[in-house]
Amino acid sequence: MNKDVIYIEPEDDITDIINQLKSAKQKVVALVPPKKLGVLRSAVNTRLIAKTATEAEKSVVIVTTDPSLMKLSAAAKIPVAKSLQSRPVIPSDESIASASDDVDETIEEESPASPTDATNTDAADATEQSDAKQPDEVINSTELEEDLADAENSDQKSDKKSKKDKKVPNFDKYRKWIILGIIGGVLLIAFLVWAFVFAPAAKIIVSIRTTAANFSENVSFVFKQEEEDIKAGKFYLEEQKLETKASTEVAATGKKNVGEKATGTISVHFLFGASSVDGDSVTIPAGTVFSHGGLKYVSVSPLTLSYKVGDCSIGQVLQNYGCPKAGKVNAQAAEPGAAYNIGPQNSGWSISGISGATASNAEAFTGGTDKEITVLTENDVNKAKEKLTSENANTGKERLLGQFNEDTLPIEASFKQTVGDPVATPKVGEEVPAGVTPKLESTTVFTMYGVDKNHLKEYVTDVASTKLADDQRVYSAGDPFFERFTEADGAYTAKLKTTTQSGPKVTEQDILEKSKGRKIGEVQTLIKSINGVSSVNVQPSYFWVRSVPNDENRITIELKVEE
Image (cartoon, rainbow, N blue to C red; front, side, top):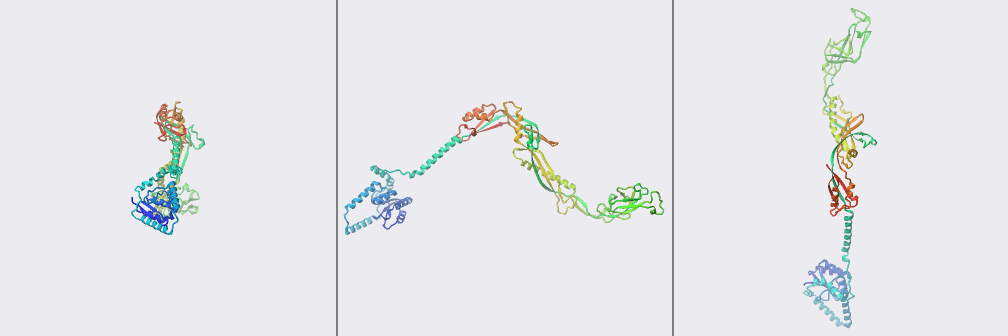
């Protein structure tokens, strides 16, 4: 088997040796130290050589007979050979002691060396080293790897011959596995305790055959929680309120004439002897309406007419009533428009609130003009209000329903919507400028009442139970709802309806007593024998659980009602 031979010089340090070892081409490397060990006298250096050989996947052998180097090699687990042709072994205490004895005997037999002998010795050593440096030398062992693997066994066999060489097992290499084994054992025990003591649980689902029955009772409501009486069918109304501001566009359809009003003068003549003008004087107040052909004119100032006997014109006959009363009043058209520009009219006039008089205009009314604008009418506002109310109703109702929690039953029939006085922009009768869309804004308040579902089911169960036999019970109060929710004189009433499910009386305690500590199959048989039970399903917490625990806290019971 080929190998590399490294001759260590006295001046070499450990770095040189390691570099040569790493650069060796053969797997087997023999180290030949000088007579003066030098760098190899350190236990640290020999361990570094052993570590480097392991990392480089080399098999290293030290060629030496020096007892101290053999001891260091043994500590580092490096095989030693006496020569390049000897079989390498890991030194034992016996072989090291034998080498020490050989060295001592050799020292005693040798005589003091003369200069000539020293010279011859050095020459011989040089010759020996020169011979050793020949490149074709090999260690005389083609089974070096097997010898290295069996070196410990060989040492153990030799140790049997000597009682003083007893090896103590090295437990360091097994410490990690021992610790892992202990941890694994603890975890296994903990798992077994959990699996068979704490983990076992069971859920028992029992299906009960029931009969449906319609429920209908009149109930009343109160607004104070302390006045609620569930047994008497009086339930507290929980109010939900929502206030919103909304706006909508208004279509302006009104037209208004804002032109100038016509003006003129109207003559008034009271008939002689008219009862309404008896007396010395008569007054026509401002604001008196004069009408002609459907057109209305309004006096703008009062007119007072009086007479004296001496005021009568020549030719008039003075009687008890005196002379006739006559005069003129300034008037203005009631509305703008050119239609009020009428010509002189001697007849056809009427005076509002005054009888016994006639009117005429000797001159035409003038100054009336037409100018039409678009305005917002009261009818426009009412239509927009109806639209706003309709649009907000659905949104407000949905939002109110969302404000009730899941344990409260909303009474949709109690929904109310109160719309405040709408505000129009611009106001009714005002001009709507071109390009401007009027808007209507209002504040709306929504309200709705609700009742606690649990209180309703409690009432239904109590009332329905009174109509059952002793061996029957109510299993489900269904989903209660209200009909005919009404208000009369501040009192609220309604009809409460639902569908109940009743059947044989089977309690959870009965099921517990028949289940605790028993095997699953036995539990199913015992519970199914109860009157009214149609099926039993026992679900263990884990697949290895074969029995129902004795602890009631680890047993869950679910009663299912078959409709």
